[in-house]
Image: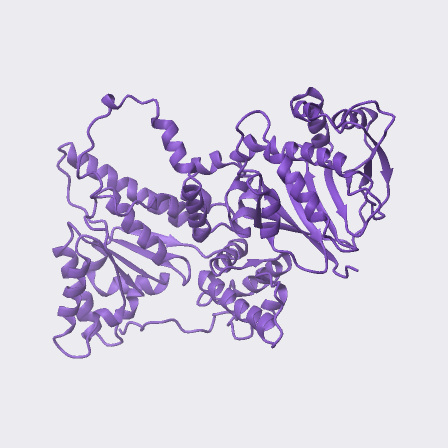
Length: 596
């Protein structure tokens, strides 16, 4: 009857279990609802509850209905009520057509085993027995699965079956342990054929209770598992791949440490932090910290303590997290160390010759000069070299007027806006004029004057290409002496460009597969010789074009697949003809040549 090729198995979290004593009576109700639901299955439909037990991992619990008709997860939540909850984003799809090479055993009730399984006292004692813990430990060590299955349309008096499957045949000891726990049954090996219901309603109810206790015994483990957080697939998988599986570890990590995890962006981190707060993990952590503290020992908190806490970004971590540009990052760190040393010496009463902290950022387009400049502004504010941390970015249009007498006031106004912060002049060489004495020269002369007037509380960073910047500083003799620091930004290599591309894709909500990564690296390799079009700029353009191709590939027709995976593939990067990947040996640079 069922023509679908996949079974969707919904993930169950046991985080909602609340024990009032050693045995939670809710298991009886869950077992009754599970079996009653199974009574209404049609021929060919199968209801299953599966526990996946792997060594060193929390048990994974799944419920599924193999049917032609979709089932709402609300129905599964009704079955488990307060005992467990479906986490929709963590489902798995199992291909029914794929051959399963695992060894399966079915539990068969053996009436020759003389035990009164009907006695509830026995069920009560089983989860506390040494056999129960030993069975769970050994099944986990060999990677076993346990399932309870109800097949629809069977009217022979039996209601379901219990299936154990393993990567290989198991030992007689483990078989015996299973029989000691699942009282009254023996294991029989079966093939891949459909298992008939072979266990009565009463026995199945008790077996389900045992399975629920296996799920329940994970409560302490699950309380510290990220499975308790209702995270999206992207956040969850990124944390899992980075082996960050516990709440405790998440609470210990800073945002910048999380940012270093592959495929984990700021939106994901915001989602994680929100979940930690909503699930009361952060507040409960604080409660444990303060619950035994003597309040009389706490000093009074100053009323103005929060006034200077509007911006608490960790700028140094942001700098270190940038892809590539190692030399530039190291140079910035040395400049900051020098600034801190100067400030400490002045505070100790040393009389030092005045020095400015103006800088020159030199590198090809797309090498993160502007990004680093913003971070430098924050770092200088942190160590009190500047007072406001303002970052004002300007170009030629902001500094050069069209009419006589207007250029100098424009430059002065820009310095006024940047007072107490950082003034970033991008493509500074664009101020050069082909003929001396024009408006550009007036702007440069006024910049030199304003740098001197504001040298105590404003830092200027000039940025541009290496050769053009050398020409720029030659134009005014007083300019070079007022810019003591030069930071060189090297081009990215192919591997670094791939990392940037993957980061840009992630910001737009996409991942890239392995074949796409190879194609991206091929394109980046061709762009290396083109200084005007390479580096981060190319990466952003490349991903934008890839996303457009993805949109056309998936949404270009009237019929749209409902199960679209937002993964960029090789075909999304085939048509890149509009990206200029040629060598720039004959390309002209921006700016003007100095006249003799």
